[in-house]
Image 1 (cartoon, rainbow, N blue to C red):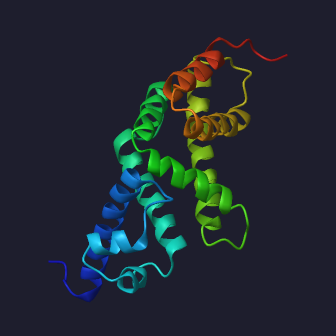
Image 2 (image 1 turned 90 degrees about the horizontal axis):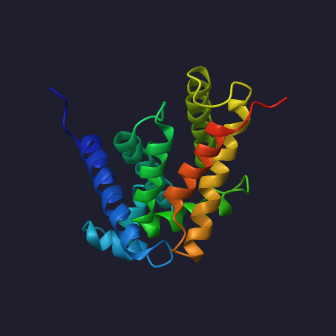
Length: 195
């Protein structure tokens, strides 16, 4: 039987805070989601809430990390059906504009190496590129894309397309992100092998 004590309660409270914060940011957007509102929603003071994370930046980084965990559990690792999985994920993102806004702003701010979220964003890009490479290698090996296409070069391009579409979508909600992601992947399926 697992022991219950202060550590276990702390882990549970931290998870409750993150799940509540996800809902608040999704509903209100990053710019309007306050530490005070999140703290009140989980029955803590602002200082009590920040005790679990250290700072507002760290809290918002952990919100994105939690979102990544949930998205991976829901949409899984892309494989042969990478187009459908990514289109579904991007469609889901369109339903939570506050989280898209948080992701877009935090990734831009975290380009500075001293930013508290820099390691998270750097590692996230590395892991998503690795997932993309594996998926493109599988697509290449099964003949779903031209054999001469380089998975190492395609993967960062794919995530540049997705991130760029999300940024544009924040300005124009008529942009059909899932359809454009599918279109990009269809282009790869019909692209001639490079010389």
